[in-house]
Length: 99
Image (cartoon, helix red, strand yellow):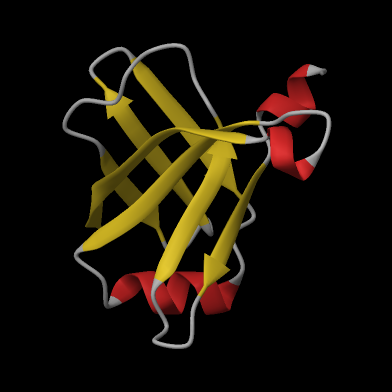
């Protein structure tokens, strides 16, 4: 897996307009995570812990609109396997949303 794949992410929105972030599992464990949104740049910084941050760029407007109304964002970090059945959730947590 190359670095671009490891930096990839996706957002899922359910019928209640709740947003979940899916991304590749990182090495360190999340502690006091927060999700800092920059509306002008259409980006966000996921601060997983004091040593680990992930910059997410090119976030779609509809996702940003949904996140503006949220206090928390559900984050699932996945270890992707060869098949869907082999994919595992390594970390699942809520991050504080800061706009």
